[in-house]
Image (cartoon, rainbow, N blue to C red):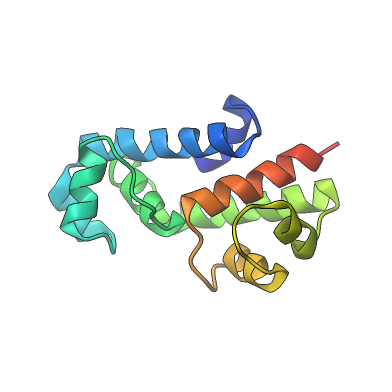
Length: 140
């Protein structure tokens, strides 16, 4: 799911974010508002926005929960797979969190990037796209 997006898009933040949003919007349209509200921390207004084709600024965990509603996969497994892919990408690209923090537009320190990658703090889809873009752009 999330890990397929970089291979299917340009590795710039915009196309990556659009790819992530497309995954969520397609799942939201199929799942419906009530299921989204029940399965995520999103309020009804945000769930309605998703079903109507607009993506509010949401956390990766909520996006994964929406996708899991129609993909028959565990939302936590989707998030763990994504985090593993990001960390392996950092290894391949020989990147550290401070380098990523300096290369993205999000106002995050290296420590905050590390916390987001480890799941100790909220990471939005926008932040994910920016982080993934740096990783993809530096891979050999």
